[in-house]
Length: 285
Image 1 (cartoon, rainbow, N blue to C red):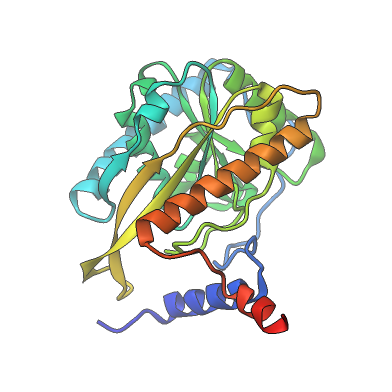
Image 2: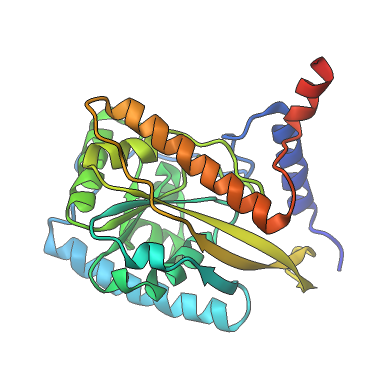
């Protein structure tokens, strides 16, 4: 099977960005998006209509998840460390590396295997463009399936922040992709942005780092590249320290999260983490 030239272009772009250290750059050609204005999103799910629509759309999403698990589009080898979700006694921010549009469904599988799913909802922070620009079935999921979209409008972001804190203090889980970019089938952990950890610091809840690793299967996907077999690693929670400086607390949690990801990466793949941009640094010494 010939390789899809569009996927090859994406992989070349990933390599170029890694060499330049531009880890937060998107590599996909996403369509332009509209701005989410204040009052557009019911972030706290105060309205009955919001909750009913979310329940209906979730049932559709669950059927789709079952379908892609059965037909092998999404393949999960195992979920390791599920006790780190089972033992939660409060709400939590969940962080995960972002490498495929379907990794959110892998997160759903891990969530459903945990006993915490019986009493805690899982909300997902998504890009503004995912909320405003996706058509069809995926657009339905993005706008209704317990999603919390970011916005370029500051007043809307205030509503977003209040919504995130509301759900966390109610004991629910909020999934954030702190790398701020999706790089297709990229196995290394990327440097993190602080936002997810500010959420946790403000709400005084832990962060549960999750790192998904991959193995090449023998068969190929429609683009001509090996199908990936996923292992979901649920790592130990990181609790906010006591103090009056939420930014410093968030920074410490972010550094601990990155360290946990790196350790998981190096242990699973049996290699030290090194980026292509590190080669320039080594040459300059």
